[in-house]
Image (cartoon, rainbow, N blue to C red; front, top):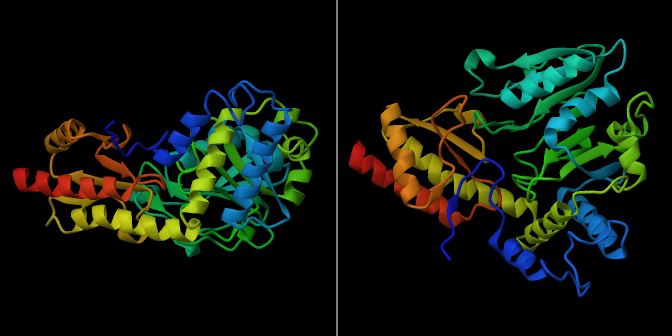
Length: 361
């Protein structure tokens, strides 16, 4: 079997070793005579999967004891609404750092719930950079400060995070969670859809400080209260059991690879190959994001003409590359280099870019 060079932005690459292990256990999980997808989420076997997944995430990401690890459904998009429902109380403002499409969607949902304002924005720079920490102004009555750690469309990434004092810092880390070490204690809430760095779509991770989880208002539906899911250890209702199981396998793979610090180095090595091909092309390729905020997860770039970009995509697909067309809202080209994208795929893309330039430069 020939594997594609998978640079999809999400759902994205899953480690081949993980896929093979899941394949072996697909029909019969640990001698149960059935798949993990068929068994009750109240069974001992599945409860072990649920607990081990949460424990592995705690270990690998350095999650302190005063935080809950929740495995929910609905994707990051549901969190856009769930966060203000839980925290945006009367007389308070939700403060949002505007860095691109995902931050915009989060703000839009918050405005349906309460008073939400922009704490900083890079729209004037077409979202091709992240704001400096000094540009972020947190209102005195802020309920929280929300940011998107990595914008998949623009290809920008926060390299450091603001100090917010008593105001909880909330981060959507859907596209870079577990790609680099993070001080979780700086945040009130970290959330992430799994389908980029943690496994398949279907499960959403929420890492939330216990005091924040406990204060969910009882005026909102039970399913939207963090307290509900914390109390039930993410088993309040039927969970996305297969997705959680796959996430467990991915976390085991990360641990086997040496953990998050090792993946951070691996991601730097991978993306350097592609950024070097861009920067050393003499202007044939041009990076979209400003260099100080270039993402290690999503590399966005352009070629001199749209005709050449279309040709690049067409020829790359013939060579087994997948997902290099830029997001429909901005065009251009994008290579998503999440944790599971192998070094060999980035080497192949770098070589293809050099060859394409020689033939068309």
